[in-house]
Length: 479
Ligand SMILES: [Zn+2]
Image (cartoon, rainbow, N blue to C red; front, side):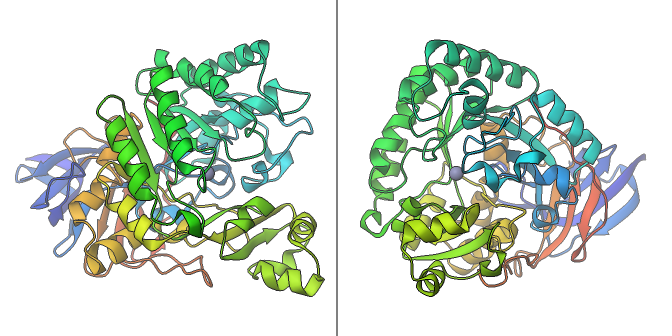
């Protein structure tokens, strides 16, 4: 008999590959999965009887803005409580590293934290800070294009970068990848990057070619009226640069664009015959980001998530504040800024189509640290498994889990994660498929989900019986 730390027995193992579940047990030793299926030769220091529960790889949240939160709130309860064991941070062009503000701190950077908190000129400096803070989840980082622009373009961002600036940014990106970043992100729909032409992005993305497994993830230039052109640009950038692309939080925003996911997914599908192209999606029809008038115009309704100068309006409808102040949209946005908002601007049918599309991955786009965050921060993964799998039967449990684990690890090059396999890291989640569901709502968003029995990060139990255990076993994940 061989000794191990923990045996989880009698589970329905859904291994993350997309294959249907099989009854079995798992032995865990030294933070790794030592055996799967039949564990008769093993004796565990501890045993968990998982009868009636599903054992899956820990969920990988491929779209997060957790860079700063992993340092400030290392318990990461909003992630661990929903079964997430690894986050990909640095999305939408804004990474905390490499970054130096020197007084230039445009939107959407305030989404991550206040200016004084940004203090990581290199990814190596950030990695050291992360090792000190010891978060409860693993973190992989993308280097943000807007962060690079702020460093390299001191005299303003309202133009394309010149040759010298592109060379500088290529150097910074190369160093970030060497320091362990898993890819590059852009936020082309935001002020710091809006004026960056496609050629600038292609020149930067092509740096990834020297780093196998590195990906280019993009919050596209447009997710509304010009979403088709934006998808085309993204795919072309990937082809021209010769690198894999991921379309972030894919949506068709604004009433006039409802239904267009049929066209966007067709474009992605055609492209996939000749290039690596993926996408992520969150299971809500409202988005959330900084408060800017152009986003309000595309929305049916808007909620304020935070306002630095006017915290008394956190959680309120923007329209009410506008009426009280008797002012127009430009003025209310300016007076509330720095501020964040939730925008109701999507169609449930598009969301279902994108979520059911086999190549899509699940990513929360959750925004920690806000006074009244969008419920996706706490509810994304259980909401997919409860609402869209169990209730609506939009897709099978095994296929949904694949979009949260195996597919995600493969896309972002996270080796030894995302599958229940011998030798893989013991990042695991144990949940009840009959009761799993999100509890966070737009009115009350900081609520842990139901149905998550246990969450293990690197073999250590981080969540059990509805509470964090205090174990913080996450690490900085590289290729
Ligand atoms: Zn984004």
